Image 1 (spheres, helix red, strand yellow):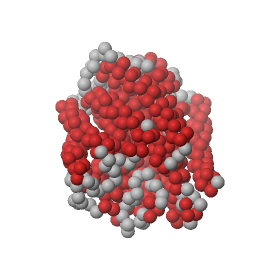
Image 2 (cartoon, rainbow over the protein chains, first blue to last red):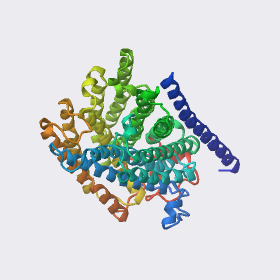
Image 3 (cartoon, rainbow over the protein chains, first blue to last red):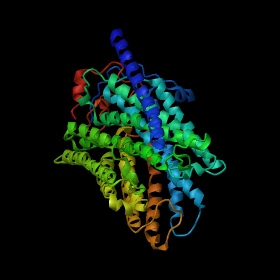
Image 4 (cartoon, each protein chain N blue to C red):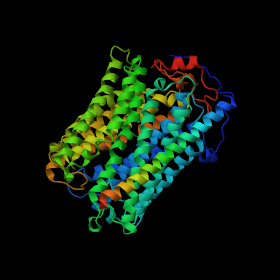
Length: 41
Length: 534
């Protein structure tokens, strides 16, 4: 694989990883917020 | 049977580090896969010993060996060890070994995170098992951790919560790694709809993991703050709602069931075509059925809690949405059967375990349909019928297919064939005893025997004794498995690259044993075409 393709792959790997980490964090915080709202709403 | 492999750029520098440091610091997907599989094997035997203790206590009415609190710890930790320590790490181990090989990638996309996510697990389970030695004993409120009962536990409660956090973090990292690898590291020409079904089912499983493991982490975090910091998320006395925990838990818990079983569907979809010497019937339908099952798993959670009291419309919704799952599952069972139709079938050990899966998992599916009927569930709830149902789904479902996967790929991993006769003995003993163990539990449940009790009325004595005999037989027959695997690692008849006459896929294009580094140069289209004959 040439270096440009390799760099492009690394960029895609980084972008997908960050998006998935953010998704997991959003679900974690979102569900706690939802539970607070529903428990005391 | 022999097939000459194209060892494109695999074996020119098969160097690897040695000693303990290799295993502590490795970033190689095959090493990490091996570590996961060894860990899962150890946890299967730890959880299995607890199951033996449970069945020994239930062998006859009256208290035999265990005190009731310890019995409750046994059922709780058995479940946690088997689910989070056995089945899930076994699937992650198989994913690590096989996904890069099957998609033509040199390794997982995030190898250092891969190492970290494995090494979290021994610490997590040490924390969980330390609970047996602290005041109050190990967690005993059931694996569902329902408050307020779980909040009345001893000092092991925060240890268990921390352990669950570590397992969750490990699972999420593993899932991120799988998705990033599949989405970004596939060889050119390996399009999504050419991927092997095991890769597809794992991709969907990984999305499920990312969607629900944070929910479990959130739920146990709130339990922790309720216990130590005076919050009242789930405490009615402070304005909270204990039933809310059940909703949050099962929003995680039901997709978790599919996390345990979807990769099993992938294995069966690999093994049945190989030993039927036919392409998989309805490849695309299998992919869409898997995705449908995953979607439906998010909208059925309250069928686990029909008896808490919910509006009739809610009961109807969760009953009908649960029954819908039978449709894509039926598609799968039909397609596996159609794959075998007029095939040249041979019965090697992986095929035998997958055939047993087909029959026995279907029994678990049918009892699941019975449990989905809300008015009937009021009778079945918390009885041994439920225990029989989920053990039929998880033991001949997940565990049999993990065994099938190991028997399928073991020659590829070790370069040796294993002892087929012993493996067939392993199959027959497992299949007979698993039915002796779990089938009578349907009768016990229908007769009204509650689950999670160390003693019972004498009317349940006979079937409990039969079930325990099945349990001891099943446990003893599993000792064959490590013996066969270790014997195979130490030597045996040389395996060819293709190993099985009807096998297709990129993993069979590399020599056996698979070199330490594979696909450093992406496979050519010709190689992908040869491997992708589903």
